Image (cartoon, rainbow, N blue to C red; front, top):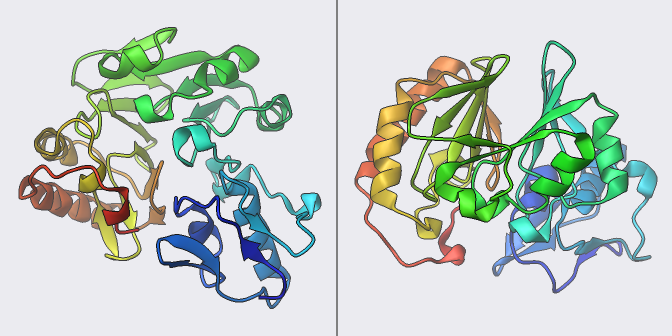
Length: 289
């Protein structure tokens, strides 16, 4: 495929396929190059996949991607940037920068750690808060928060994963944590999973739900629910009527923007579907990306 390849370290996190659809696909449980890029736009898309891949598995024939084509942090919308440089210590989870009207920035979950990356993210604006959606994404949170001089947030249900957190979200009721930003506890994927809602526009869903390209809809990863699928269903039913957003921005799984009314309808329907699910063994290969 014009020299591009995916090496054997790939663990099928789906990140590259989100960024270079049509160029990278899933074959036998791993990402594969489907065809070489045909123009500058596709070359940029492929390099976005390169610099997001947590295992650095996507390579040109030379083995050296063009550093000038690293797009991260990459704008997704006027108020959100994708951090890229996903970390193998969070199983390749996506992380985001949320821009606030004051000029402050919040980081939701964390990319791989390096001082150079931290300085690149700080150049966007002063990072005041690092928001962890749950225990699986706690890696690097303390290092980024300390570098920025920011507050580190986590829910009490997952506090043992980051006991040095500066701010602990407690209970199950929504909590306003910043200008236009509310934390909605959503136990299920883990005991301490949280949704962060901003401006009735952005929903940072962690691993509670995501946009599935396979289903063409919101989905839960019931085969990778560590705490309780029944509890997740209860959480979704409780929360669906309280939240409004146009963007779903998960840790794992794809992103999607829809009219807020359509997204609300789909979230209510997801809550009802999840109520019919039953516990199942952990199986990463069963996730429908």
